[in-house]
Image (cartoon, rainbow, N blue to C red):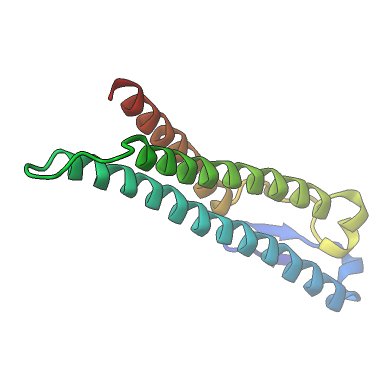
Length: 150
């Protein structure tokens, strides 16, 4: 039995045909793992974006004429570093959890239920997560270096 996954056909084991309910439960679990990772991507995007925005806003605000100097000028930078760091760190933890769960689901224990002989380990959700993690590291470095100079 062949399964069409959108990119390539995977050959299903004949034993899965009789276990459709468990196979579809496995598929729902697999898609749930993807949705969870994408939820973390949305959360990390918000944290990284908001942290970088706070940093840029207060840096530009302090450069405006007729604006009094801040009482504690490092507070905005500390908050920005915290938000960007929290978003980036949470994303990398989510990627590690995702990889561990995917390895478990594609393991020999679920081979008959999964219905396929091998699984694609790199998904679009994982690629987006890694890309956003790199963006978070760059944003963190940018804020930290601006803090060191300023």
